[in-house]
Image (cartoon, rainbow, N blue to C red):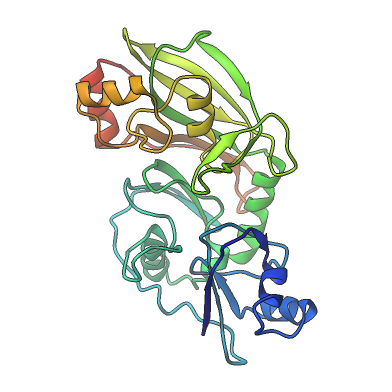
Length: 311
C-alpha cells in the first residue's frame, strides 16, 4: 500500500501521476475508477476530486481494489431519527469525527465505524464510498443523512449538489446580531496564512460562493441563539460567516473573538455551540419530502441554560 499526505492542493489523478508510481495521468484515472485508491479512509472513484493540504491518499500495490475491512463495527448508541428502505438519519454525537482522516490515530473510532455497526444489524452491505451523503464537523452535533445503497447515495447527493436540501442549524453566538435577521452572502476560501482555516474573501478564483441566513431566536445582554439556514454547503461555512460579521459561535477555538473568549470563561462553555437541528430531503424510497429534527445535545442545552437562552 502506497501512502502520501497532500502538501499542495491538486486533482486526484494529477496528484497520483506526479508520485512516480503510476505511469501517466490516464493510468491514474484507471486506478482510481477501479477502486484502488482511498482518500482519508474512503474509497474514491472521482478522478477530478480536488485534494486539500493534509489529506491522506492511499493506493493499493496489487491488482485487487483496496478493502475496507479496517473499519470495524462500533456500537456508538447513535439515535436513528428517520429510516426507510433507502436511507436513514442519525443524530451525530459531539466530539466524534464523521470519518477517518489524515493526522488521526489509526484506532480512532468515527461515526463511520458506528454506521458499519448499524448496517451489520440490518444485514445491509457496507461500502464507505456510498454511505455518507454529507459531512458535519467533529464537534458539531445533529442530523446526519446516510444512504443505504449506492443508488440512494447518488440520488441524495444530487439534491445537495442542486441545493434542494433544507438545512437549519442552531448556534449560540457572542453578541446580539443587528439586524436580528439577515443573509450573509460572502465567498469562502482556504486561508493563505493558515491552511487549516477557511476565511471570507472578496473575489478570487480559489473561493466558492457561500450564503447563510440567520434568524435570532432569543438573546440576552451579551449572547444570542440563532437559527441558521444554509443555502450552500462550504467547509466551516456557518462558523466562518458568523465570525466574519462579528458574532462568533461560542466554544469555537478556531474562529473566535475577545468577546467570545470572555463569555466562554464567564459561562464556563467548553463545547462548540453548533447543532444541525433540522434536515429536509426527498427520499429515493418514496420520492416524498421528509423533515427530520434532532434535539440539541445535553451539552448544547446546558450551555443555553448557563447563558439564560431559551429555544
